[in-house]
Length: 607
Image (cartoon, rainbow, N blue to C red; front, side, top):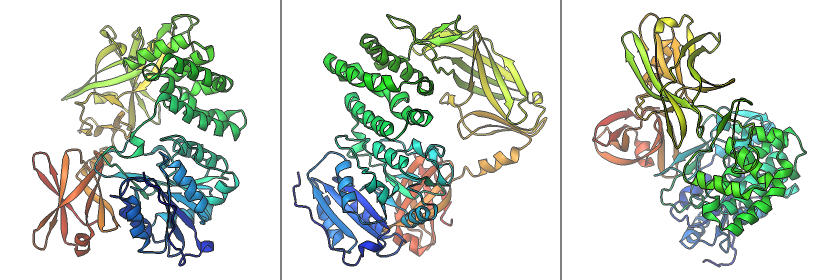
């Protein structure tokens, strides 16, 4: 463990009163990536002297501190501090905040990097909108997927000077954002200690609650988050349910201390209580297997008085069924039933449900005591196959409720016009059922012909299933068999029509507007959509059909020399090619994408 005394580089060239933004980097065993990260800050176009870099080494056991000292010797913008290992980013970030001088602070992880205009855009947005927090769109790069998914819901579009709940910023509580420093200092907002991961959630939530409003930059990726693939990043380690309980309690405390009882509080409590990573994570499938009987008793006794006061009907209505049942059992103090349900979930069995025909609803029946009613149950509709014949389309699938013992009494496949709300409906044969650990499902086959659709434009496919007087509706296509090919299918008659999948994966029909989907189809061939430089590397962003490609070469057109590049696939339709900047400067190159069978396709370098 490294116990060097705290050190800092001189910053004589940077006047503290002129600093717009302090970039705070917690460092632990990142010697391989540190130079690239720091250089991405030094390559910012915000202007010399308007930023400072504060790196806090958290007792690294590799050469991270040596790399930092080398970097500090190459400029006057970097301050270095060291602390004994604390086990998370909280303590280093808190120290960095104490040592910062900027009007704003930005938290950057030691293996990630920024686009050159990131800090300038973030600071100017904060100044122009008086936002307390500014979020920027994140993108993934590196040899493997990150341990956690990057936030996406809040980044559909750029939003300026907006409420953090209405804008969906509340869905992303990570610290990789720009914060107005005065808000953090005046309200004593710090990262709670003692958590391996998740310490940023209470911090960010409190900053949101003390900001006049926030802004979101979603026009492009500003922050690149590395997927290491070596299992050494802290977020890949996870936490026990008991430790996670402490984590969600810290978030609950921040929410309760900074809000009044009511709708806002209930909305904010969805995440730590009613959502999948709230009560279900703590008292669900790992509860019994991870803790002794005495520990389980202590966890229930610890959490029950907290949640009982907060478990309002409105908050309960937001919850997933597992959260609703488990939290009701916590309030009832029924440890035996919680343990029985945890064991079932740990064996990968769904929440068991029964249909109460008298109350027309699905309920959970404990071993002892009253049923747990009023559950927010959804149907599961899975598309198994889609066959196109000259005169018709044949669809097979299944429908039911996960964990339910009763199949639907009746069901329909309904095509509904998105604007006119007209319908084309087909009753489904529900006589074929099967029962497995996932519950009882109905298997169906149905056909339709295109001459049934008289209105042009968009139609959406849903399955409507009835249990008594209860009807559950679910889009068809989001859940589908692995053999389904998500390519548009085109028909010439009776009206030009495209059978396609929406961006959410749902099955749709577009009557009379085939050109739109033909255009989308033509863009399935990979094409460059942007590029930027980071240090000595050039990053070329690609969009198109990329799922089959496994590597990339850069071919110099001048002499036909081939240089291997790094292909970083983010999704099946999005990737980046990393090549030496020296090649990019010369121009006159092409990128070859290669699949597992060594087939090649050329991607033009011009953007």
